[in-house]
Amino acid sequence: MTRVLIRNVAVLVVPEQGECRVDEAQDIHIHDDLVTAITPTTADSPTANPTDSPTDSPTGSPTGSPTGSPTGSPTGSPTGSPTGSPTGSPADSSTASPPDGLAGSPTDAPSDGEVIDGTGLVAVPGLVNSHTHSPMVMMRGAAEDLSIADWFNQRIWPMEVNLTPERVRVGARLACAEMLLAGVTTFVDHYFHADQIAAAAIESGIRADLAPTYFSSAGADGIKAAVDTTRELSRLHPRITASLGPHATYTVTDDDLKRTAEIARAEGFRIHLHAAETGDQTQASLDNHGVTPVQVLERTGVLEAGALIAHGCGIRDDDLPILERYADRTAVASCPKVYLKLAMGEVTPIKGLRSAGVQVGIGTDGAAVHNTLDVWEAIRMSP
Ligand SMILES: [Zn+2]
Image: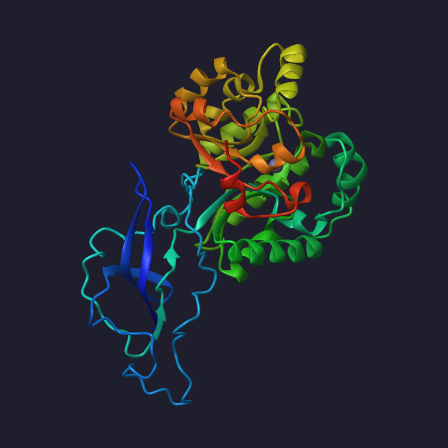
């Protein structure tokens, strides 16, 4: 058993309801990578000074770092927090509190473990990157200063059609490392070769909800392969969950969306897809089909099954009552830096969605658009 005590650290507590608060001077007790208790720091708490520690280190080297900061612990004062995992992923990423009943557990000094001095630092819950395409980090900077059409058709798509499983895995490894260093402990991904992304996530220690992407143009066999991958990933590892990943309302037909919704309902999956990404897209849907993308999601049963909608900048006021009906199982991921970099002139209508009871998560989208996977940065840019 490995034990770590983070001593005298401020803890950001994010309750399920109500305001966040900061509890000063707390000790965080960690056994085998799990937080087992958070207790007030007392005068007789073990200190980080190795000379005060009862531990006899056989090598003579200190087991704690009296002045160093815990790895990856941000030192800035948080100005916001993610709203939790919109897909219902692990609950431990939405709160810094230990499970009920643990906060008052007796302090057990880790006589055989490491003591880290948290003085002057704040411990925060792991962030959730609620929408990304992690392997695209390897395309960072490869398509700059272009219209969105040229960005995709001239630069990104030619690279994506030549992707190999190995390259996806390399990109996902880099993305997992970057996200962990930026305080992200769960990412919600939408990409090809998702089995390779799962392998990278398992290797890194991060949590992931993975949606193997498909287009109707892939045909029945291509869609079946993606759905089968979702099934396999859902059984793969405790830190991996899986969703169905139709690309978008404009690249997947209504019939395929209906079949997706049926599978989701029958097998308990969520559906992660792009919809109403811009006002123009919503207008094109109205012009071509007489319905908004949100109405497409309702009439195909996607909302009924439960969905994570990426972007939603083109969600209209009269879409909100529709989303409100499915608010217990539908969420929207907002990636504000994308909208700013592309000068879209519109953002996810977070206030309207929240007033309709719809959860909104913060994401980065793929790093090929705006070059980072930093959720703190996205939170700062949120309207
Ligand atoms: Zn996306």
